[in-house]
Length: 266
Ligand SMILES: C[S@@+](CC[C@H](N)C(=O)[O-])C[C@H]1O[C@@H](n2cnc3c(N)ncnc32)[C@H](O)[C@@H]1O
Image (cartoon, rainbow, N blue to C red; front, side, top):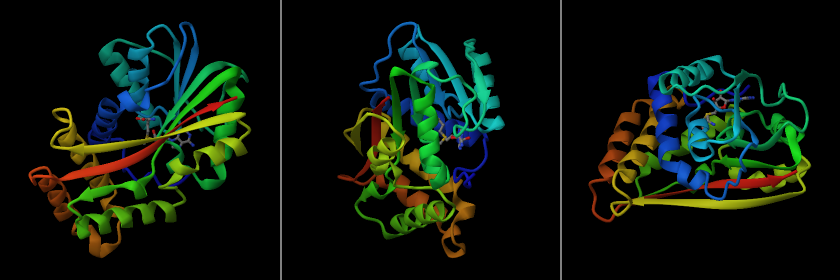
């Protein structure tokens, strides 16, 4: 397993995943088609932030979640209790799913592959394919962190984020895996994979609350990985976060980020 760069499953991480799902799910789930009565797996569901969005959008499907982390699943279970909506949660690695072949009509998976060792990526995509029915689709959503651009440019912010992506890559993860989805899915045996680059451009004219929420999201990403950054930068993370929040107050400022979605057909 690679080092999970976002730290522990604590209230901050739970809230970060929730915010991410809250603001990005309208793009992440755009074009996702799942019919009534379908069996759906949210693979690497984490705290269930996206599972709940799937649930809200497709209330008539049989939803299952799975994740390797007991703590993430405990947080997901607690939230299920709070909102009184239970669906099965299974602890397992996505590289060996404990489900029979051809069980699901759709597998949803967001923000997993950047965290897994490179040698496991194709096995994981192959497992998702194995548990899908012949007409099934895997809906994937992954990062392309080199696409992140703040305007006006800020050397400290850029240095901190570049260092973070380097730490992630050195730990076995892949901060630009989104752009590789077509090749990876083809290697895992999918017959057709549609890739959808999805660019977010946040600025003062974004829907109310979005600019601030996404600035906060990236500040939390930086803070969550602070301990992993090289010594000299570690002490400058708070300054970088302060610069990031300051961006919001600068007229004409913006930031842009592209993530990649894929629809991989069995
Ligand atoms: C960034 S979180 C994303 C969670 C969720 N998909 C979402 O969008 O909120 C990544 C999740 O992948 C899980 N994970 C990492 N490696 C895994 C593996 N090999 N099998 C299953 N889950 C894994 C982590 O425990 C974590 O919950």
